[in-house]
Length: 540
Image 1 (cartoon, rainbow, N blue to C red):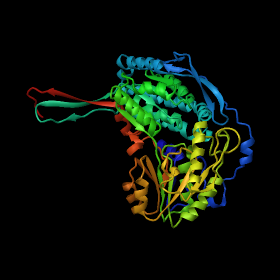
Image 2: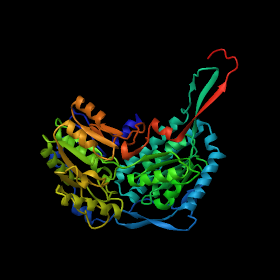
Image 3: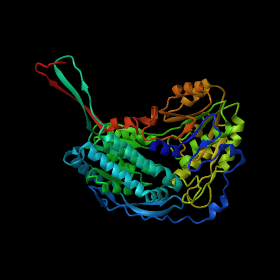
Image 4: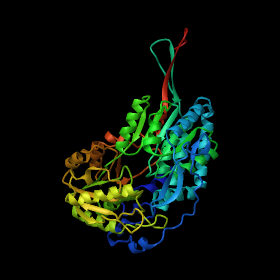
């Protein structure tokens, strides 16, 4: 039940026959949508000084062998506040030499240390204590996440940090339930399979959900008895360092989890190509995923799990309650400033309800609360950094130049930081860049379609296959779409439901493998067959 409560906070779901909706952060009735109840003052938000976070940055070094240490080179890099562009802290900049140190420590911890030799019950208890510490430090973790990333504090504190604790308890529960099989054979043999930890896992996480991606990666790896070398995103190193410190407080032996902050071409490439890393897991862009896969193949052919980009369709069917569909489509795209790999970034709307949908989608975007993410009631904070900010504005200009109709937004919000106004385009065509490329920002593109065959073909005409949303009353329509869409997750009358037990991953160029749930455990296990000859067995 705990997972249901937490995941319902993150997702929005609508019953086709219900008059109310389960909404993110504040319960609201969508029947009020057209009356514009989401009031806010853009002028006030633009001129107010940023709130000073009530949290200190205590950890800025690399974590290797259970100790916080400087980079061998002595170099540091700046992590910035996306609300202002100002420096939060100087972080130790790890590179290949630091990765070598971390891998050596992780290798020794796996080959000689206590972690894989502990009983599964003992490993479970460590993860459960970690979950308790996450809850104890909820506000501190959330404040670091918001300060470093720009996401609303309410989202971090009420949803993402509790989900991290839930993930740890979920994987703690699996620790003592991992086992092999006894297999019958044709002959006098006893055959069993062993599920063994794979060894040293290299993990590279992104900047959009630092704490949750930390949990998605570390949870299954540790539950299976592996050791870890992790590279955090250079934009958001802070929260993972604190979380790692808490994990050691919970009783994790030294050397089992090592964290190297740094940049992709140096630290990330060193992990991906390291000959003594047994497994690699990467979350990020498809372009970088290709590089990571090449480096892994050219080194020791280590197995790779990839969770990559997406351009997910959100399909509004002709029978839709338009008010509810608008609200869910809005959430599907704009959640987390649009910086979500599975964002519903291609909104396909049936021609019968298209015009009404566009007008109400515009009104909803105009009423979205944008501002300092530490303020209560804020739905949208700044984008992560100047590179992402500039990239989004270029895509917006491309949409205008290619002939799409800019309904609202399309420009900077305020005069400081990396804020962008919620943007809505209508009359979007499939060949436009805003309909093909992953923008990773608050830009909704609304496309018109005539029938199911057409929308299935168009929705699948992409290099990506991460997720999709379907909004309909009709169970036959829902069943047709869920089976026809070539994606790893289909949400029907809901979106972004991330229960700890639900597997997540993509088709096509959205990646390899699955994270979360029982399927994630296989990423960190080897299967060994053991065959023993039997002498005069009583039975076979």
